[in-house]
Image 1 (cartoon, rainbow, N blue to C red):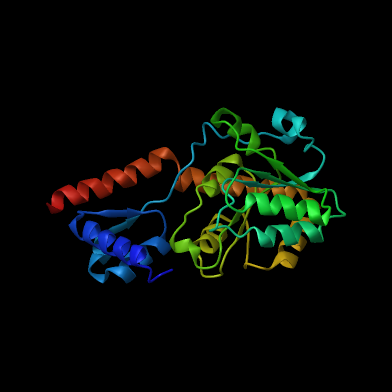
Image 2 (image 1 turned 120 degrees about the vertical axis):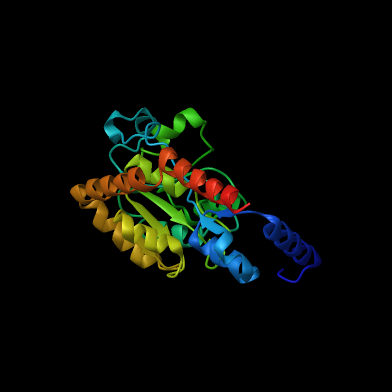
Length: 261
């Protein structure tokens, strides 16, 4: 918990390190706020630089041309992908509830990865007799350009309040893949704003499985929209989150830190 001696020790250590730093780089506006809340004097030292994905490596690929989609029989089903860690910070329940609502429709959920919540999810899917859920292990790096594009929608989910601790890097890969992205998070999370700016999908509050199910249905019936949302997301990545753009931002922060010395 928050007041556990180890947690207090860790916070104290963080504060000491932060105060000595010339600059602090965090991955999201929520993380920046967390640092400032802990140590208000650091406000002008904290820079937000997002994660990135390489759009030359992860390139949109239609499912009929994608061996990964063919291999796992995803070409003719509207496919909803959750790729990455299924850990304590991630809202898996909302995804499961959504799959329950869509169990009689030609919609396939695919979970790729591992994490603390994976085994329980597999058990739940078995217990409920859901046939619309597929589990695959983490894929090798060279497979990612195919696994990440073998879907019609990518899901990113964060437990309420956890957005100050985690910044899902899977979001950036999903944008590069040119598929729509839906986030499940608290309404004030920075992810909600990012998706709205990118115009690449939608955001749903934790627990709103009905809203998410309805949205998935509407996308499944509207292939042109799926395509345009995916393109918008990729364009947003190209403008904001490529290795070149992000490297420039690091460069700027380092230069400013050096001139302050």
